[in-house]
Figure 1 (cartoon, rainbow, N blue to C red):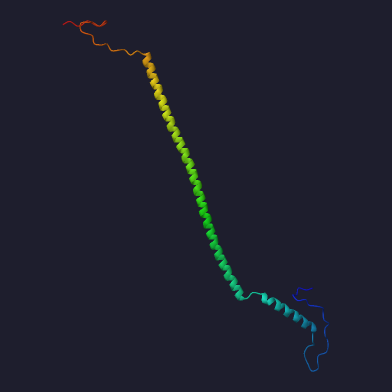
Figure 2: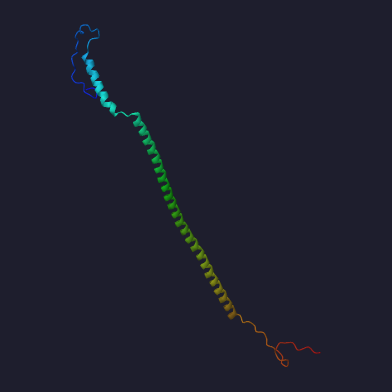
Length: 161
């Protein structure tokens, strides 16, 4: 079977009769008539399905509209994703900053606490050392004023006038 849309049917025998009296045209060819009928049927079947200029123009307008709508939708979707990403990054950075702040405060309070502790320890050690020294060393007491009639042992006699 050929690629024709309409089957060609069984072949007809060629009519090779002599031309009609008085007609001076070419001899009648029945096969040609049949082939023309097949072609006309094929064209009548295919032509209504082909696009017209109006159909193509409408398709072009539809594609342009679709592209514009798609571009706008893509732009809106990208803007939405950008804002979501921005919010997510901002939230993550805020959490990281809070952790770093808490770590810094912990270090500062630890150093301040250690300073206070060492200050108290040093003060207590100095106080202990001073009290130990005070107990081990007898602080000489200043002699009390003796009355003039009594002499202090080991003192020089008063000068004569």
